[in-house]
Length: 258
Image (tube, rainbow, N blue to C red):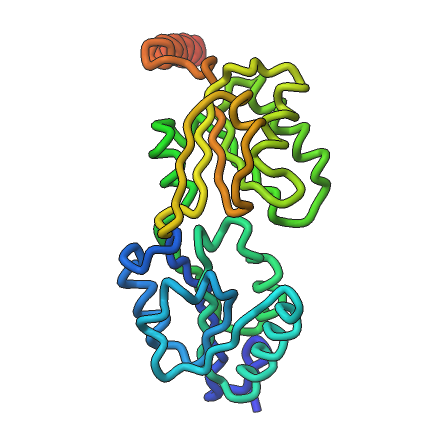
C-alpha cells in the first residue's frame, strides 16, 4: 500500500492541538480554544492548565501531569493516541509558545497533525499593566532548560541596549534575586519594575515599585516581571530617527539612479 509521510493512505493521522488557554481565568479562554478542547478525545496537562478549561471537560479522557509523572504521562498519551487515532489537546496557561515545553511536544508527537492555538498571553497582560510597547522589550524565560547564567547576563546586556525587560521567573531566579542581580550589575536601584503574580486568578497580585523594593520582597514563583528602561526612546526620538532613515534611503536611491 502506498504510504504518505509514513501513514497508509486512508488511515487518519492522530491530531494534537496545543492550546493556549489564557492566564488562568476561564472567562479569558477564547472560543477557538474551547472548540479544540471540546473536540478532543484525550486532554493532558498540569492541574493549572486544566483548571481554566474544566467547564468543557465532559466526555474526554483526562490525564493530569505532576512533578513526579509528567514525562511518563505525556509519553503514555502519545502511544495511546497513535494506537487509537484519537485527537489530543494539551492546554497551556499563559502562552503555548512561551515556556510551554513546545519543542518537546513537537518532537514527541512528530508524526501527528499538529496545530498550535494561541490565546490571551500573560506576557501581553504584563506589558499592558506596565504600559510598555512589547516591540521595545526583550523577553526572557527562566522556566526552560539551558544556561541560566548566560541568560541572566543577557538580561543586563538587553537593558544596556535600551530595552525593557520582560522576565518569567523560576525558583532559581525569583523576582527578588533578579532585582538584586541587576543592581549588582550596575542598574540603579530606583529603576522601576512591575511584578505580576498569578494573573487573573483569585490571588492575583500586581506590585509596582523600584528594583530595590522588589529585592526585599518575596513573590510566588508564578510571576512575570517587567523592568522599565528609562532609556527607551520617546516618540519624538523615534520620529526623528525615522526621518533620518527616510532621508538616507532617498539619498541612496538617488545615488543609484544617477
